[in-house]
Amino acid sequence: MAIYNPQSLKAEEFINDGEILETLKYAEENKRNIPLIDSILEKARPKKNEHGISCSGLSHREASVLLACDIPEKVEEMYKLAREIKLAFYGNRIVMFAPLYLSNYCVNGCVYCPYHFKNKHIARIKLTQEQVKNEVIALQDMGHKRLAIESGEDPVNSPIEYILECINTIYSIKHKNGAIRRVNVNIAATTVENYRKLKEAGIGTYILFQETYHKKSYLELHPTGPKHNYDYHTEAMDRAMEGGIDDVGLGVLFGLEMYKYEFAGLLMHAEHLEAVHGVGPHTISVPRIKRADDIDPTVFDNSLSDEMFAKIIACIRIAVPYTGMIISTRESESVRKMALELGVSQISGASRTSVGGYTEKERPHDSEQFDVSDQRTLDEVVNWLMRLGHIPSFCTACYREGRTGDRFMSLCKNGQIINCCHPNALMTLAEYLVDYGSEDTREVGFKMIEEELKKIPNEKVRDIAKNNIEAIKASNRRDFRF
Image 1 (cartoon, rainbow, N blue to C red):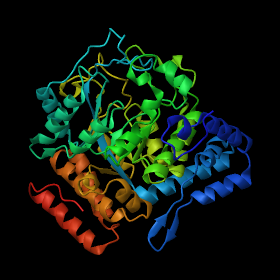
Image 2 (image 1 turned 30 degrees about the vertical axis):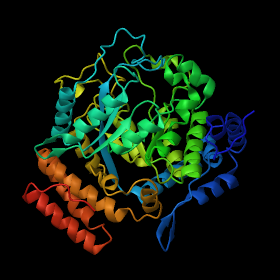
Image 3 (image 1 turned 135 degrees about the horizontal axis):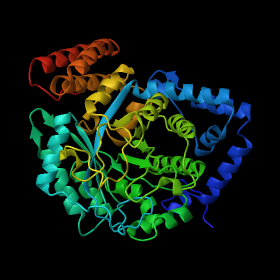
Image 4 (image 1 turned 90 degrees about the vertical axis):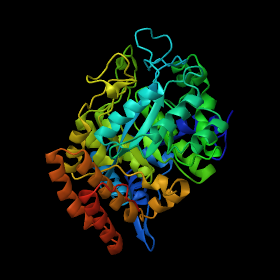
């Protein structure tokens, strides 16, 4: 029987079923233990020191107690703490990105995804490099600077060479004032050698959703194809780190399995990365299963209410304070608003989840990976964010200045990130407003920039940012960064 060991490189030891079950039992027994809950909340609070801010985060067991807690006033206290932690580390900045689907050919049999190889309804498409270029130009014309590329797993139709060629094409396209400055990659688990190639291609974060940490369920949900190998999939982040990728993104597909089990497994994975590599996950995504071409989410017994979804987001923010949290257009405007208030720091905008979808006038539905709930334009999302008090950020500076891995985490953990991220967010927002914003969005945006400049603590940085923003407004000079 496997023994729990966060420093192990074996999936069954760092995501240990026995440890998770013990954790869930402990959480259930202590879900109304007010002294314990108070001590956990106190441990998690941000504390000021000579370097800025420190925040200890929580273990998977401590966080599971909070998730199980059903005392209304304590839940409200969690939500308040989650907001406090998010503001301490990320301020009111929200990073913007869009997914780009390259191919939906797939050899796997995942029962919750319409790309599964038995689906004969869906149109199978693989973008040519010319089509990649056209998709990128369409995204640039919206104002996007950061993409997450997606592809089904198919060694014949989508080998690593194809992915690398697409990355090179994406980076090569400069259209008017548009440029994709950072490509994050969400593709199937692969080898150390292939991760090394992705790193050399200049990717940002490597993202891979576990889908479910419950091994028995995982094997049933992935009955055929290379993704059926639970251990190979779960150990992918260690191979990515070995290949030189120091920013990785975790996630589960909530609704597939018992949410409390997934929550504990997700945090154990974060603890494992910290224990072995000294760097926790750069991002954690929180997708919920949604309806798609031949997929009905109601067939899964563990679908998640909005209320419990909110609690999970808050508890992840409290437990892993430094991580970027991502929510996609799977979710509605109202759910995304709630998530932003409880800890999410990155959102997609104007997403199309079909291959070749951005160059189509009407949103295609015959090749979507999942239904998109938030179908607003990027300008509408940017305007909405600002009216809620959030700064839409198109910044990619940390990647290009080498502030990745432990360098980024140290900046984030001591709260010093505000001196580069806040001005970078404002400068990239100014670019968006000048080049792509509607009249109303520009009016709202420049008022926000004027007020937010005052919040930059370093006077020299503040003056440089102000001058750079004036240069953006007066000329075609772009891509200023700290």
